[in-house]
Amino acid sequence: MTNADEAVALFQQGFTCSQAVLSVFADDFGLDRDLALRISQGFGAGIAYTDDVCGALAGAIMVIGLRYGRIRADDTAAKEKTYAVVNEFLREFETSHGSVACTGLLGYNLSDPQQVAEVKKSKVVMARCPALVRDAVRLVEKVV
Image 1 (tube, helix red, strand yellow):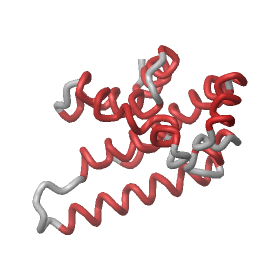
Image 2 (tube, one colour):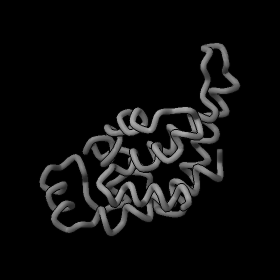
Image 3 (cartoon, one colour):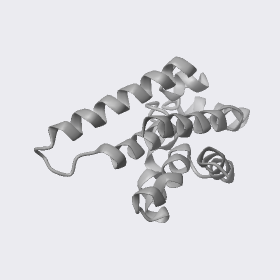
């Protein structure tokens, strides 16, 4: 099973998109999978229904940080590399999907409780998000 397949399966089991993406890479970085699930929980649903960046992208950005992120304040090269890779990742995702935010991807504003209720009722998340999770994993594998 590929990372993309595993991430989609986790998402379909009920984990958030951010959890699904980060957790499939946890072992690659010596990160406990349960810890990865906890760390990434709040980033799902456009960062906890704030209508921000897609959680699948937030999970992927965490993976990029694990690969390239700095661990010393003076390591500006690692900081710039991380930012460059994140920007490349986001550009490619937006080119493919037209947005990096949940509103643009789902057509609903997740910061509006009425629209969140409509999203849950319409099941748009289960219709659209598995493909977004899959693409986020594939793209992050490409750039890391």
